[in-house]
Every structure is written in structure tokens, then in C-alpha cells.
Length: 267
Image (cartoon, helix red, strand yellow):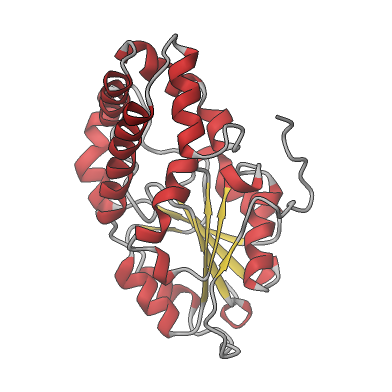
């Protein structure tokens, strides 16, 4: 890796900066939300699963609209109080995952050395809603949420909009992720260098459970590039970047930004 050219590091979110949570946990939260809404819990949980791509692409607007839509999809007509109860449950769960982040020491070290840091996340509206309270928010200079940009990895736009917000060229970026959804090859396709993150701690905590569920923990078995098990390894791997320009302002990438090379999905 040519250290002199690297000015920015972009990160995936789930299982890279924060745990994604076990599928059983997600299902339990969804069922509890269904009970909050006065609808069949299993049907509501199924609706949450079935609409994953729509939610992550931002086709259901904000959290409030999403929860009410899903309740009506399974025959419910919840009160405002019921909707708020379900939303609170969902956001508290999302915040608990962010609170379990292992990434802060590495992010602080990278920032101290002058790297610009960004996030490229495939996520729903709940992540946007809790982001101001996330312990990660103060350590990232720009964020690109798929539910606002309308594109998911490995679409080129997911990476390009984040690089543009950081005001760096793609060739000056290193992308770090666990390898889901071909995100590493997607980053390389736009000129970034990619590093796979596979945490030892995550292996120990959930690897066996995922195997029991029939899920392969190695999300990108064909990956032959660099792999790290601790984000602090990045500091030594990419060296010291060019000095910052002195600006510490953080850029929020909104849904009004249309990524290059991408077509926003129709509603």
C-alpha cells in the first residue's frame, strides 16, 4: 500500500465499527415492536425482514413513517402512542449496538495522525435517527447512509458520495469492511484500496452461533487482499497522511445528494 497517497479511511458500519447483533435479537425486537403496535408479532417481524432492501434504500422515509407503514401492511392501525412505543424500542436497541463499539481507540488514533474519516453504511432510517447520540458521531468527518443516498454497496455511488464529502479522490482512500455484499470489490472498482476487517472478538462471541444458524461467518471467502483483526492495525498499515487543511467541520451527506454513476431508485 502506497502510504504517501492515503489521506482518508472509509468504514463500513455493522461488524466493522459496531456489532450487527444476532439475527435472533433482531427478530425478538421486531416481535416486541409488533406487540407494541397491537399487531401480530410474527407477522410484523416477517414484514420487517421482507422490506429490508426497501428500507435500506430509503423508500420508506423516516422511522415514524416506516413503523406506521409496516403496521398497516400487516393489518394494523396503531395509535400515535403505540407507534412511539415501538420506535423507542427500536432506537434503544440500535443505540445499544453503537454503545458496544470497539472502534473508538482506532478512530482517535487515525484522526490524531491527520486522516480524514468517513462512513459508508447500508442502513435504515433508525441509524439516521440515533446517529447524533452514537459514540461514533464525533469521530467521523462525513457519513453516507444508503437510506438517504438511495444506493447500496457495492454501487459506486455509495463510495463516491463519501469521498466527495471528504474532498478526497478515491485513489486517496482506504475502505475497511467485513466483506458483506461485495463491498470490498466495490470499493476497489472505484479506485480505493480495500482492507477486510474480521474481529477476533466477533469470531469468539457470535461465530459459533452463526454457524449453527447456517450462516457462513466468512462473508467474502474469495478475498485475497489484506485482512486485519484489530482496527488499530490500520495506523501502522497506512502510515502518516498528508497534513489536514485545518478544517475540522463535519459533513453530513443528505438525501439531496445524487451519487455519481448511480440511479436513484424510484418510489
